[in-house]
Length: 187
Image (cartoon, rainbow, N blue to C red; front, side, top):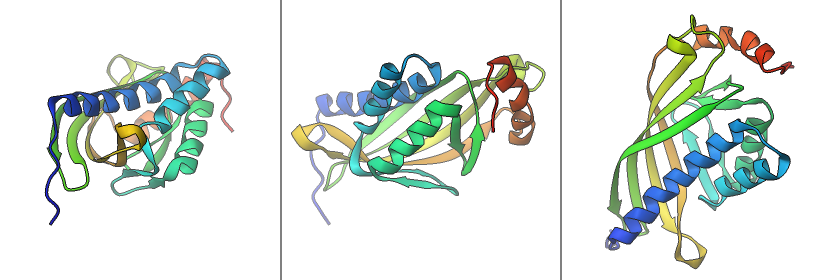
């Protein structure tokens, strides 16, 4: 067994900020904007992972490496498609990711962090979910390593769905109206 590294207070701050950078990049891809700002959000997301980093949804997909993460970003920016609990869903419009309760422990190769995520999706119809807001809670289990230059990066992010405030099929049924309100015609 490898001897755990020492995790300093500065390391903890950097690791929690890494999670925040992931959240901001994901959110900024749904806010829209010009092509340069969208490319910047994609680049910011890729910088949170090692080159061979993994974003895995328990019971669903595993997105491995920068090329696959880049494709996920392109799809997310183009039509609001995301992956939730292993199922691809469309959520054109605003999303907000908020993480909390970060617990960070050293390992022989870096660190592990567990945290909770609350994701908010703004939908078009308040009768589908309260106030038109679809809320999902998730647990993130992360493996982190020091990247080039010494900064922390995600080697893997494993997402486990915990709760949602509406049935996925009911929310998905609202998507055509949601797209139409935004002037988007899904294929």
